[in-house]
Amino acid sequence: MTSETPRPFNVYLASEETASLDSFEGIPEVSHEATSDRLQLKYAWQRKLHGSLDSFGDLAPGLLLAAAVAIIATFVAKWLGTSVMGFDRSPISPILATVVLGLILRNLIGLPKRYRDGLSWCVKRILRIGVALLGLGLSLAALGSIGLHAIPVVIGCILTAILGVIWLGKLAGLSHPLSTLIAVGTSICGVTAIVATGPAIDADDDEVSYSVAVITLFGILALLTYPFLAHFLFAGDPRLAGFFLGTAIHDTSQVAGAGLMYQLAYDSPEALDVAATTKLVRNLCLGAVIPVMAILHQRRNRKEGSSLGKSKLGFSKLVPGFVIAFIALAALRSIGDMGGSAFGIFSKDTWEGFLSFSRSASLACLTVALAAIGLGTSFLQIRNLGFRPLVIGFAAATLVGAVSVGLIRLFVA
Image 1 (cartoon, rainbow, N blue to C red):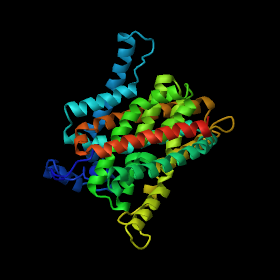
Image 2 (image 1 turned 90 degrees about the vertical axis):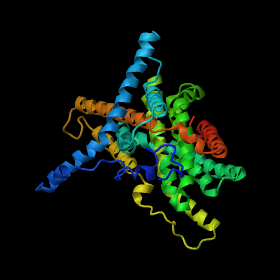
Image 3 (image 1 turned 180 degrees about the vertical axis):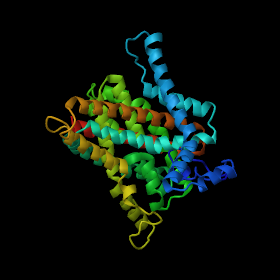
Image 4 (image 1 turned 120 degrees about the vertical axis):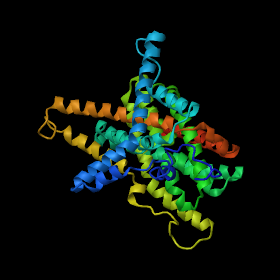
């Protein structure tokens, strides 16, 4: 990437950027001794384990830093709330403290390149593991109930974002691809939607980078403020707050973080469950929206055929694997809850202990991933955006949030 090319706002959330992190740039030359060690291994399983150790060496700095930030921030939040402020239970959210500490470190002193691989892995892998594990907290019946109530709100918010943002972008003089990317990022699943839609509508690198920056900026702001706004708007009803968080916040990571903040602040796990389920319903809409955007783009440019342009859209892009894992684990939970013992093998106490452990593991994964998001967000990149995309991003977030509140009161409350 040349110095003239604008860098993405968050290098750990933009797949095109993170895809190049395993290149040889900046990596010291491997010694002949280390190379020969691997070549001399006799069995395939030895070579695979050797490769895993090699990969862990690249990931370890970022992983350990994200974990350290999460642990330190959690301790500081508890210490400030109890020892300094005198509360029995700290009013300071450890999730809020984790994100803020990560942002401070990233923007105050910066991070060397050696941390990027591990931080990217936290956002791309550990986050999805944490979200998938949330499926064990819901039965298929609960999942279906939440999903059915979420559908009208999700569809209304998606249509509002796509139509409204594209229209506002046209008024502001933004390019059609940039307006479309901001619209799909706001309406469905943030950066994932942008990266998947960009090639389908022939968006250039600058347009993808700018839209990622807008979505990340306003998503972070929503993560830090919407849990408290939701508690106020819905009079402390965690279920309604969960629907709001799941439809009004852009990215999956930000929704999970906001739900986790609500849970810890108001002692309500239901908000996180509802928010995560609602967000996954939005994610499933990606499979319908991308082809529609591509076809409309082709018609607008008077192109023939129904090809999706440069994009190769496989099933894994349209339906993320962690969504399938979330549903599968909810099914596992439903089966385990049947009868007097889980699967006819484990006692109820053992099964409940496993579910409690999975919940704790999920929260730990989400906290580490949110630390990585804070560490990966550079506010210095805002200067590359210009004024108009920021205005459209703010208008999009406000519009979708307002529509979400209205539809929840109409269809859910």
